[in-house]
Image (cartoon, rainbow, N blue to C red):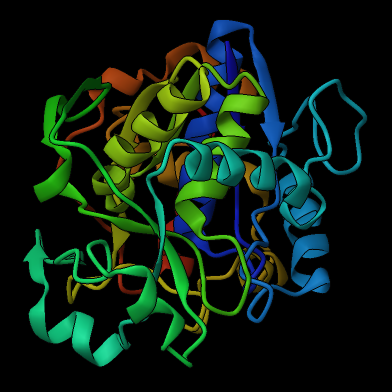
Amino acid sequence: MRGRFAPSPTGYMHLGNAWTAFLCWLQVRQAGGVLVLRIEDVDEQRSKSYFAAAVLEDLAWLGLAWDEGPDISGAYGPYIQQERYGKYRVVLDLLRSRGILYPCYCSRARIQSVSAPHAGEHAIYDGHCFGMGTAERLAMTKKPSWRVHVPAQDISFVDGIYGRQRCFLPTACGDFVVRRADGLYAYQLAVAADDGDMAITHVLRGRDLLSSTAQQIWLMQLAGWTAPQYTHVPLLIDSQGRRLSKRQYGISIRQLRSSGLDSQSILSYMAYKGGLVRRAALYTHEELVRQCRLTDIRTDDIVIDDDVESAIHLMRQPL
């Protein structure tokens, strides 16, 4: 097994990020596999090097050790997206050679006004620029983004938590952007190229990314890679039903650490709230690896306590 945790360095790690990291670590350690830490900083405007450094520090403090990453040499590096642009260019050239890459000149306002909403997560592009002629394209002055034209094809996979998924590409994702108008590579292309090139066999991530999986599998198949097995997990949310955010005060790992909490208490709290252990008690890392079962995770999002700091303190009862 080759699993990966791939955080975006756009803020300090919060409890929701730690939840996913913990489950990635747990899945790999239980299988005796290799855990890859990859920094997904393809969004250059929002990503900061000091946040990337903080990710490594917080993960190390939590005791969620990795086997390959920015600070550990490995055969599949580099492990930072901004150092992998050459690999993305190869995939982009492949799409161009297949005749399915095309420039899109549509404004964001137009896309939102004419595209069909999909599952409340994103809009499905109507393909307006795909049929545009050469003369019409030459007359355009706006710098285009680049989209890939998807075929009328089903992509099926079995998710480790949410079961069988069947996605018809034109209605599940539509023609999607692989390079933005500002020249930056889009998330879908970068992630598919990274997972394929790094020989990742298992992907565990938040269920909010479930709707992105079909297009990533399709891109990997086009490039000749074997798609990994996917497990999408419920998110941690507050009592108002809001997913945890890096902008929320008091739930960052740094804030919890500064309040005097230790890593065992935090991991034990997440394991208990997520239904991985039955007792609200303090567990060692070794006990969590032995006792937690990913198959026990329910599909509903997990509501954390309003006073999460006090709730985690209560976990400090040894077994």
